[in-house]
Each structure stands twice: as C-alpha cells, then as structure tokens.
Amino acid sequence: MHNHDIVLTSLIAIGMTF
Image (tube, rainbow, N blue to C red):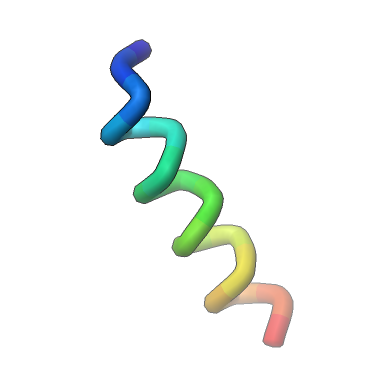
C-alpha cells in the first residue's frame, strides 16, 4: 500500500464514523 492509499482509507473511515 502507498501512503496515499492509507490517507484515503483514513479519510473514508473518519467520514463513515461521523
């Protein structure tokens, strides 16, 4: 995985959480 993918995954996780 690339750092960009990790950032996107984190943003998606945060978006789904809130």
